[in-house]
Image (cartoon, rainbow, N blue to C red; front, side, top):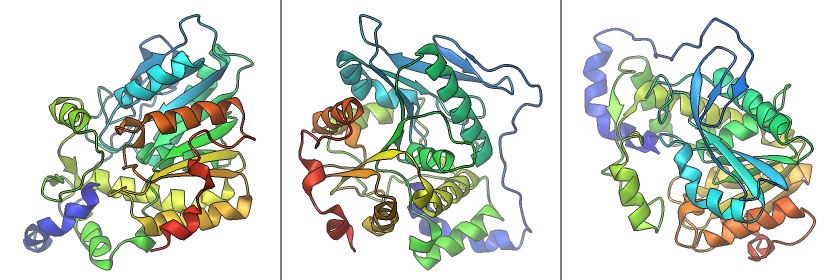
Length: 332
């Protein structure tokens, strides 16, 4: 989570205050409107933006359910290669696309804006649902993708989905951040929005799957240096997600790892208290889980839980991860 490195750049911010204000840069959406289209390797949004698509489908072509997957910040659709293969072997089709500014999508490194991301999700989910007519559709969001899933599903125009799967959703809103991070973000986005930050010095371990992490480090499509204005956009999304959690009206499967070093337990606890009010959430807490639960060494457990929950949302999860009192465990 690159927000944590803002304090490392403190020494460059105050001289920049003397230079006057700057404007955060957002990648513009197109003005021409077309009918959205879903192809095998890409998705054409209503503004003609072309977003790469990856899919993992059952070999016999008959899916009993469909998942639309949203990747995390600085990641891209290939994030779901491991769970996608597993789920396809269990009769569940998984579709993922590179969100604007990430992977091979246009505007690399630039934040596109909450409305653009939400509109893409609505359009893509509708197209996937039409392609698999009559099959239940679920939205799976990892980290930033989880925040977007919450915001969009709790909006006045939710996607046509039967349920939501949130894997370590990014709900680290401003109210649960240290004051100095809020101040530095506000100052930096108005003075040096182009400043690029990395998290290399933080010592954060997002997964125990070291080989996978090394692969991410070598992958040129994974963003390594992040603009301050992109972090600002992410924080706005996380803020909105945390504020909208109790407006979700679909069934929710929430996955969280005890060893998550990216999303702190305090905002997760706030989210759980809100979810408890709507009574439609199944919560799974993995003792050995990290932030990238679906790519950890023990990822087979959450994969199996997702497949079981999609098949029957009334039954306990096979891993037993939903039997723990997660609200008590996440109280800071």
